[in-house]
Length: 60
Image (cartoon, rainbow, N blue to C red; front, side):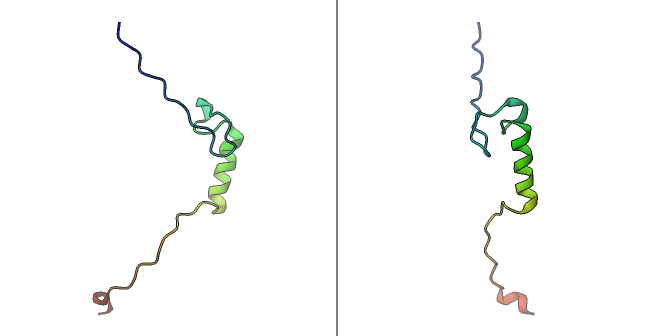
């Protein structure tokens, strides 16, 4: 009989750290999903970046 693949372990909810619910993955509830969306829309999440230095060749 073939072995069943292991069930992937769900990470905790990124908002409240409770166990994630597969229905709302990766969150634990619809509320935490909405909180996360609100944070994105408010600009709370950002990726730091450095401004590129101007190339000398671009000054033409």
